[in-house]
Image (cartoon, rainbow, N blue to C red; front, side, top):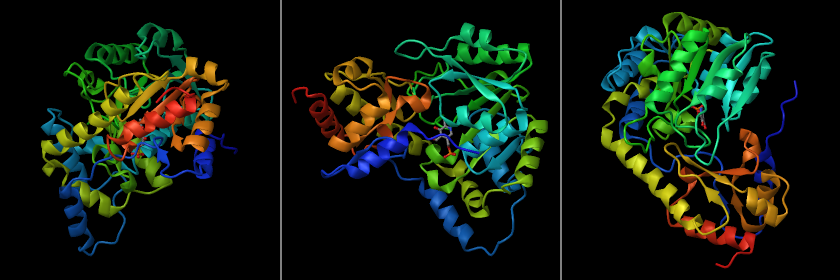
Length: 382
Ligand SMILES: Cc1ncc(COP(=O)(O)O)c(C=O)c1O
């Protein structure tokens, strides 16, 4: 099987060729905050205990109890037998799609979208059917989504807050999506990797709120962004018991359960105080605001995100002026000459856009340096 190259690869090569000082990589969504002490201490305690065997394939009972308690503190009643623990959100998405799709099936996908949602269905002879989100705010188009559903559709996939657009599902959009899936007999994969990073006024909801038994919604969460622990490769799924049993069987048949130390550490998640996420959210939002401010008077048209780590920017007019025929070509030149790496929109089915990872900014003040280099690149006055 040949795996298609992603546009970002060329940008990373170009960044390596940058000859100046202090390259600034704003592509990967690396959290800018430290993980919670509670989880690090729990990891150290777990490492001191002599347990070297496999965990159960659904995840340890203790970590599933802890995750259930986490959801209970958010007012959701999800018993541990409806929780499946796996190697991060990406593997959760892979397992869900692997156990849901047959050859010829379709997945309706609002775009711009996280690239694996496009690539994974192809592994199973299925395909994603993109439905473009409209306007500078990437508004959700429920009518277009419904008209993309055919007899081959098995699932709609959404991320809220969205990677890459930063758009969030409002309560009425979430309710409508769940009702649509229920009516058409399909599932809704709700990827909530960035759930802890919503900058809204409380009008945003998880689709789970409209399907508490998980018969329609298969929901994905992860420690990567939530606790700043991307390297720990741990995430979980909530859904109905039958789906959880299928996912468990899938995990047993190939990758085996995630490692016991990370699961033991995650048992401490209910002890993480709310102030941890208040501070983490502030750290991200301050960086987003710094970038929006710094780029406000350039030709780069940024969208103010409602959540998540990223700013999506429209560079259509800019590309006309610079003569680049793709966002990838634009990003490669920018990385090579100015040492600023952004993620080309092509990878998200968003031509003429770039994704800026605000979370990767080492400090908010670096935003002015980024804007200076971009202006230099665009030959705009500094
Ligand atoms: C929407 C979305 N889902 C899933 C993932 C992967 O998360 P994990 O590191 O838990 O596999 C990412 C990572 O960037 C993401 O943006």
